[in-house]
Length: 341
Image (cartoon, rainbow, N blue to C red):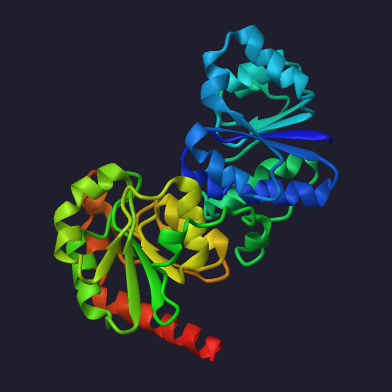
């Protein structure tokens, strides 16, 4: 069990909830080396985990000839590969590279030929959280415990953050609660809506909250009217932070509010207050995708959400009251202030 490769080539939030696999593996096999096969843009997140030793860029590997890709896997002497995100090409490469232990879900037909350790894992109908489901893939190598959500945060290992550039660092307040609002989701989640974020900004007391707006360059363009409207009450960071800078910035902030997005899960893994806003529909409901962290929290309506399933515009998530969100944030800010006294 010297060299173990975790394969997850999807998005930020998914990668965050895969990181505990690395932490558990390091606990099981302290001297092992953990490799992570992922998308290029997720590298800064993966590099931030103290439990991961090496990153393999999937885009670069995919661009190579099969022989060259196989050589990379062989040169790293991988003993185990864990297919957290099933991919037929990667599964075939792992088999051809003769990786001794190849773990994957039994629910993929191609795994019947490419994986020699298969876990009968159904995600869609499970009552377990995504992070718990990921850890079930370790059963073939002896880890069969279902960790509670309270036990998982210590296995993220997000400690290798880079220094934050001074012009960004200087905008953090030592007197107010530094709150990040991340309004958009790049289509990965149902959104709370700009009207609700507008009302929230208006409710929160200006003398208590220092509010930042984050998002990509494209998201900043989409919400430019919203940003302009509240430029006297907020600090616009859309398009101004690389992923590594965003991770560093979130580690210094006090809290974030967002839908089920990568930044929400990163913030919860970093241990700051992470308040997620969720739609009450399976499989995107909080039972599966809530932020997990020492100070993670979420809001969801206790109702059926069947009418919204075929629409990105979910009236159920938009019906969550800004006043309720503000109440939670104000309470959290008071708690933090009392701890600092």
